[in-house]
Length: 244
Ligand SMILES: C[S@@+](CC[C@H](N)C(=O)[O-])C[C@H]1O[C@@H](n2cnc3c(N)ncnc32)[C@H](O)[C@@H]1O
Image (cartoon, rainbow, N blue to C red; front, side, top):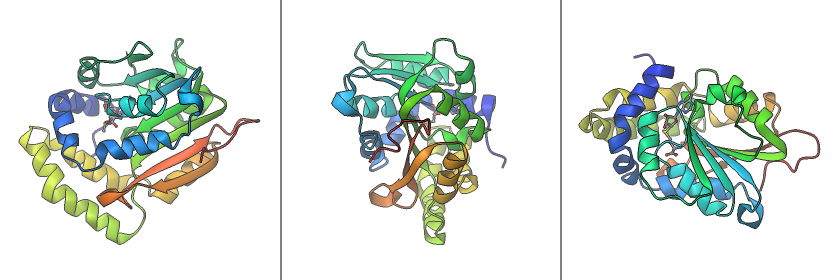
């Protein structure tokens, strides 16, 4: 099976949106790991005065994590899927959060976008057709000293973690996704993780894109070696790089 991309992927997320929160709630650590990655941005003063971007916000799980890490920040959350955004918008949000229907590829040309003090992208980069182009847009939208946190299924490179990922997909993720009528999307999830950069390769990709102080951190639980947080600074002069 080829991977889902662009319009086909968005259509699959539109279809999966009604069951998305139920499936992620059944994944131990999904929300805790998002909160951990958002906190790793170490945003000062609860985010007061900062403008943050949640890129690929989906139904708002990553937006909520970002908001918990920085409740006083202004948060812009964007996603390509109208169906996922509808689910996000149906939830209660404070006035400092806004949602926009926009693709990552459209960001660079978005007149209302940026600059941002930090960008959070959870489970996005594996899905984009040209991650280098999106990274370039993100870097251009970051203020000097701005930070990026990417939270992603990116395997450690160990055969053990690769085998674990395939076993979990075959035993749990694809059967659960099939029950909700979204087999293609969850099959894509399995294959896209196998095809995506390993954690060291994605860290190197970030450095090649000009980000500074790139760091790779593990998450806890069964996702150890399967999901990582990548922290980086904008790489522009004068910035404090990468967070801690
Ligand atoms: C796996 S979901 C993750 C959602 C959310 N960040 C979370 O942590 O729960 C990936 C999201 O990325 C969005 N997405 C995929 N490709 C995109 C693109 N090129 N531009 C914007 N959003 C995209 C999908 O529509 C989907 O909502």
